[in-house]
Image (tube, rainbow, N blue to C red):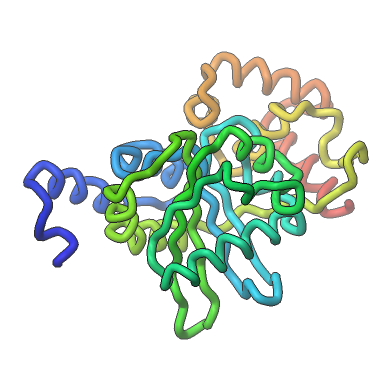
Length: 258
């Protein structure tokens, strides 16, 4: 309890609320809402990237939680992300496996290390990265967490907060099934599962497949439920279907045959 002994009553109450809400996380929308809530008071960020597996061999899995448009797990090209993940993993090891801050502008996102995907584009607007991880001594696979912030600096209070909240962050993430990652296609190649859908329409369908309502999708994407409804009408027309279930089924069939 040493981590909490120096905290004021207000901070203790806030941490208690955050931890209680984290324990209640059951799905991706819950996780996003939790990270965008009071967690932001201690860990200000726009993007959270989690990577787990064997960092030496590159046999990794990733998940992204972000409210930024288009920054989603299924848009990742893992082979482009590997150099960046290994650099961050080595930094974490070099810090004694303690929380550490990296200035994103210091060259970590150079041409050889910047992922060429929606995440890579979003990272150009980030200024700081906070790294920490969990060591899995039984499975022998580590899990690295990186939160990216547009703030120029993250202070020592943020590092201390990461030490406190990491176990609850890890528990929340492990309770949510990872989203599938999209297979990489060369730039300009057509993805058959898109059916002519725009990037925003594809993004909306990703959340529809997770069972989200128009209101929930609007909250996630920071648009109105009415705008989501209009997008859905255009999606139905492009897919030549009449409802959400048919739309999901048609896209899933394309994925299974693609």
